[in-house]
Image (tube, rainbow, N blue to C red; front, side, top):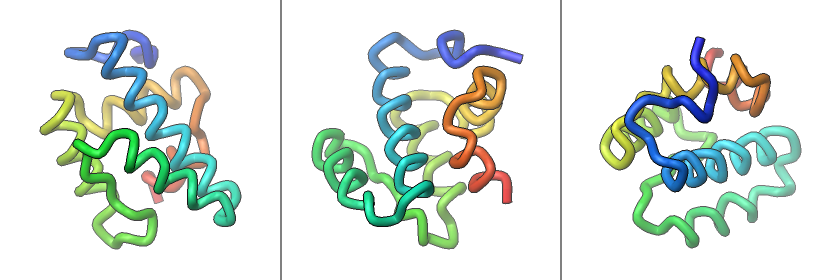
Length: 96
């Protein structure tokens, strides 16, 4: 399994953006009162169309956005997160 820092077709900058997005989703899953953090990330990375966690097509939309903007799949990112044991609440959410 690949580490997060070894994601194929990514640069340090793109991994940083993915890291920020995944960290924010993970925080909101842990405590829904922190949902304003997701709004802040959406403003900072306004070129991304980030789905709401309540969206029934969350996985499909996030995968499409990752593929379109960064040429990396949600599956690859989730596997890297599992390998590094980071964002495990989001990983569980995506896998449910």
